[in-house]
Image (cartoon, rainbow, N blue to C red; front, side, top):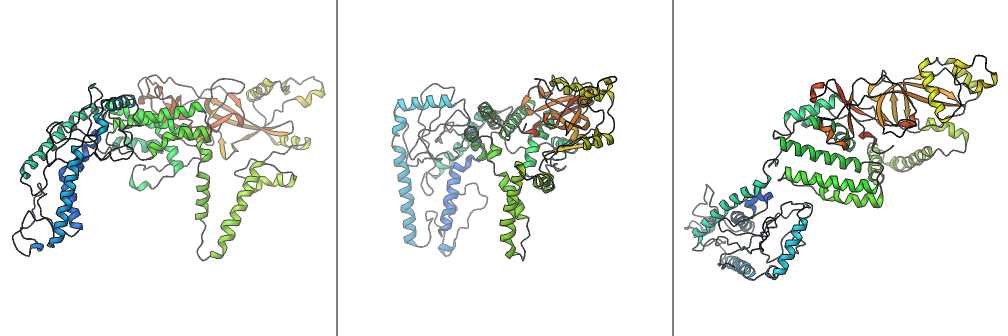
Length: 630
């Protein structure tokens, strides 16, 4: 080890951060030229651990305690302290006296300074038992090599606090070097007032220059895709996102986002709006948006956003499994890796660490929406909207008793457990919007009256409906083939009349015909009597007719024509829950029932020039609004 001078001080790294992906641990440094090493993330505030920062802190501390500033530690200041200070009453200022006029306080301050310096020198002079043993160094090297692939944990040598252990030394462990660790104690400038002040200033300059040079060498590893400093979304990208928000087709039950998103005037977004933005809107526009001028940087940012959306879709789903929870962790770790490599200066919030625990939470407790506090927060919001001015005597009745009664009533209505027939019939009136009323059975007279007022279906619609019902051996006969048949078979004839509905509501969702409400007509659905993957399409018409004494609803859907994803970014991002379809649906009609509908779609129409190879206008459709409900 090199000899230690009396001016040697121990400077510790003050930026021990979670998730540092640098394959190097730095616990300290040296002021010798070319020897100072630091985290690449410290380049923007490296002077915080420098000599000048320590001098400024000492000066501010003395001012807080009533000491006058001697001006000796402001080397780079353009304005020096006046030669005569109030403490000296006009007499020439003595630079060696940095204390107050009180001699006793001055002696106390000098003793504290000497004791602190001697303590630091003695601590540095002692060898650290941990690093003196080569076996310990080899063990630390093995831990670092194992953790080099995992950026979420940075092992530290038996240090459990954010600050390094007392008396620890600096260790430079480069991933590409196989040699043993080298102790590099750092010497700092001598205290003010010593004869070696000029030498200390030279050392300080050397320290700063070598720091800059070393930072540049360290940062070479992160050039290219890395973005340093504050990143701002380009104006062109912000305008494209705003255009998508204006043009996107969303169902009526989804709260739209402000058109001026990204500006100060748009106001505050709710949690539900944030979820819609990141799962249903941005996945449509980000793949075709240039977020950065550098192509590599833009690709890394898109990849990071994709992993974030994939993890969010799993976390916000109402269904989960062990494989899904493990996939969430994989996506979230990749997102953090890409974020740290693309934005080395980023200061990650605590949620970045908390998110790694969701895998265990989902395995133990189930889907996060089931244990979320959203429902309680919504009830709190309803309570906060109640006006209480000059009505303190009514708060107990209104906010406690009536709200509790309302909650119990809604719970009872959702269970549909009514033994009393009158209550069962009135349940639809008590909660018409949120409860699916139980349909009453119709007698023969009611069926005859209903069919007498309903218009007749077209031949094509009738044949499609008859074929759909008879797939499961329902045994319905066509009224077109009833000529000369026994009248006893008339009860098995499928009625040719049906009411045409413009909309159908179920579970708070409204499904409409394409000519009535285009956004509410775009759906994802299961193909009846088939094991194929879910498809997307447009509701062409809605039919309602009585069968076996109960009203049944059928929807005629035109499937979308799927387009090839080759040559588009969506081929790389399957978990965006998006697809490209032609703006004009297929002419083929398909019969489905409400139970086959999965969710509404978010859709955005794009020109053929958006991607190379596209020969017609197309739509980007997203089914992330489902959130695993069906």
